[in-house]
Length: 255
Image (cartoon, rainbow, N blue to C red; front, side, top):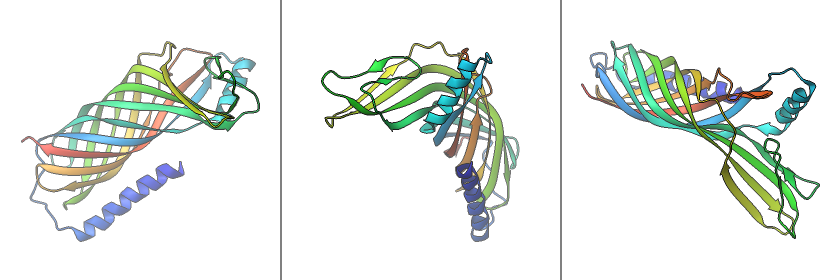
């Protein structure tokens, strides 16, 4: 949460500083239709829920909360904005995203590591695993729809946005990283066979700055928070994926 607060504070501070330095462009309005590309490095994690209320599920939930942590992901794709006036616009697009979480590298005191979700034990004949790490990657096609608000008459303006993305599940992969007592390392990525829910919905909000070079070109930096409101799988212990990122976009006006 401190990371999220820092990102928003940085964006707002940069906006206030920029407004003092840049000349006003009140007579230059944005193009009615803008298309752009975006990339967002994301801080990704999940929240867990005990669906059946059993003590065994409580144990699994507790273990996972103690051992799983966040990972880096991303969201990237194409966007289009229909500007209704100089302050309000409707945005849409298509994105590709990598979400998930991980188990950090942990020292082991036994000769094999059991993946907590698959139950498989990994080992290499003649050597012993001393530490292991698992990274769980969830890949989605995202279709965002949002309303943009911009404030100010100068080249650098404050922007904020709210909306939701429809997330279409593509696949999940697990990356296993092992270190052995003989100094060897092993890294392997494989798709999983779990039946995940096909569709999710992620409301999101953002706030940042828009640097307008001209009526047809502008650059945006927007700290963004996205949260999946639907469970990712029907299971005794399920998860809800979320991420917080720094969304960077470049737009070109069509007309």
